Amino acid sequence: MESAATTPPSAASAAATGPAAGTLPPEPPQESGPPGSVKALLQTVNTLLEEANGALRGRMELFSLELRRTGSAVAQMVALALLAGLLASVAWLTLMAGLYMVLVSLGLHWSLAVLAVLLINGGGAVAALMRARSLTSDLGFPATKRRLRFGPHRSEPEPIVPPSPRQEAADGNP
Image (cartoon, rainbow, N blue to C red; front, top):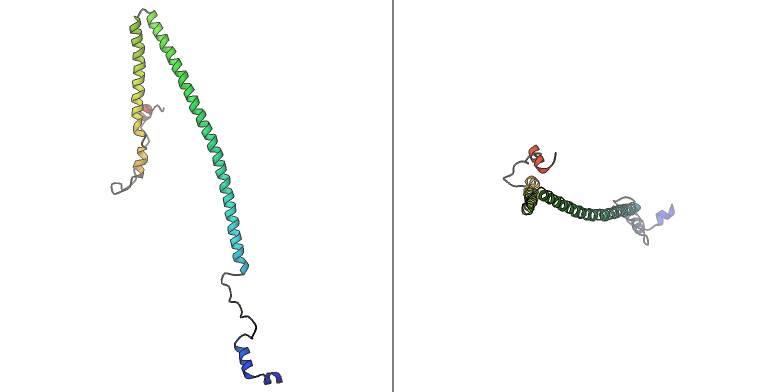
């Protein structure tokens, strides 16, 4: 007890008001929680990004493989369609040659038989061209353009109307 009384008043007031000489001031409290939580959060985010990258890489590899397979299938389909077209052309020529021979054997003059074969081929070509021309209106995605049109002239979306049975029959759909 005597030591407290013998302590100079200036030392007692310094001990009461501030840190002693040679010691560090206390650290301010951290607002984000314990110091390990930020590090753990960053590690979790890093792990999540690595897993997302791996999943995306796997999906892109699968997409690439399927795209190659699809390209190969399309190339085969085009080649087979060309082959089918060639075979159909040969069959058509054979049919027309047979028709010519039948007409000549029935006594029709050869020039009239050739004319009959030409008229049949020309009529088929005209019908095919007319049908192809009627399909050009569908090339510009008209229904999609109508649905996507914005502006003052467009207050509400148009209802989607299925094609009429007459139009389906003209398109070759039953």
